[in-house]
Length: 216
Image (cartoon, rainbow, N blue to C red; front, side, top):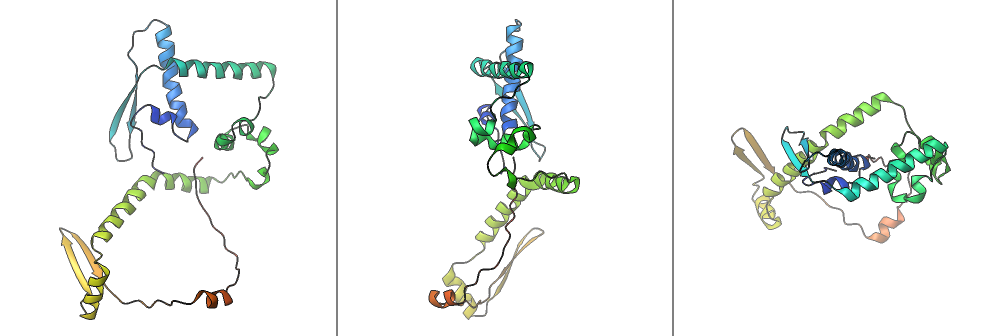
């Protein structure tokens, strides 16, 4: 899914924990600077899209968020000093399970989670590189499909017009836009409308495997 950032809050509202971290990181920089006596109005995110466009998003200091993160840092230091582990995130915030799946310490506590035996952590650089390349092309692919569908819809005649053209054996049109050719091809297709009771008679369960690709 394409993620768009237009204001600082968009980072906080992202379902990707590392994007939320960018907000906290810049906010802590502002916190340190202001508490050292620096006179600054705020910070700025400078983003660049895959198409090469630049965007600046200005952000004001958020003291409440900065103290919230500082408290978390204190908690981390506490457990490090005690050589103990806090309650796993998947227990206290189940909705944040994606964070656990990318954590470097998942082997310490994720095994306690019910159903964890279904999770297999792979170490395959070839597949990983393919996945990374696929992700880098996603924005282009989504836009490509969107524009392709928009063009196709613009050149599909109403059903009644299609029937009339086919009856007249008028089956092809070529629309030229500079170097681009949009070919319109009409044809008859046979549809078999089989009653449900007959379809059910020949129903049979067969194995299938559905593969989906998501991001943590």
